[in-house]
Amino acid sequence: MSRSPFEPGFAELPQIIPVFPLSGVLLLPHGKLPLNVFEPRYLAMVNDALAGQRIIGMIQPTAQEKTESKDHPALYHTGCAGRIVQFAETEDGRFLITLAGLSRFAVKQELPLQRGYRRVIADWSRFRSDIDTQEIARAHAVVDRARMLRAAKAFFHMNKLDANWEAIKETPDDKLVTALSMICPFAPPEKQGLLECVDTGERAKVLTALMEMALLGPQPAGGQAVN
Image (cartoon, rainbow, N blue to C red; front, side, top):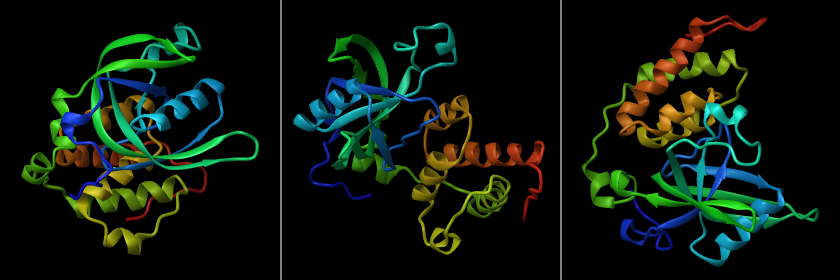
C-alpha cells in the first residue's frame, strides 16, 4: 500500500496528540472519516493541528461515560490517529474536515487540557504494522470475501442502507473491510472491538460475525434479509 509523501512514517509519529472523543465513530488506518466540527474547543483543536502535523486522534468514551463528567468522560485505552487531508470553513464558522487514518495508538497518559480540548501521550509501539510499509507488505490477510459480502448485502437491506455493489466488487479486500467496519451502524463496544482486531483478517471475521448476529435479531417492520 503506497504512502503519501506528506504522511509521516512510524518514527515521525508525534508523542503528544490531541484527541477527539466521539462515541460510535470509528476511524481505521487507511480509512477516510469526514467530520463536521463546531464546538469551540474542537475548532481550537483543528486550528492547532493545522499549524502542526495535522494529526488528531479519534477515540471513544467508555460505557462509564454516563457516570463521568459530561465534558470529560473516561476514554477507551485504544484509539486511531488520522491526518487532516481535507479542510473547509463554512460561513457559520464550522470546519468540515476529512481525516485519513494513519495508525492506532494506546493512551499512555492523559495531559492537562489545552484550549479546552484533550491531549494524550500516545504509545504507537504495538501498531507498527498500521503504518510501516514493510510490515504492511508482510501481512497477508485471509478474508472470506463471499461470506462477508452475503452478510453485508443482507445487513444493508435490513438497515435500509445504500451501497454501490458494482463498485464494491472491484474494491480490494483490505479497503472493503475497512470501509464496511467504519460505516456499519454497530454499537460503540462493537466498533471498539473492530478497532482492536490484530489485523485485517481478524477484523473481517469479527465484522462478518457482527453482521450475521444482527441478522438473527428482530427484523424491523417491513424489513426482510436478502441472500
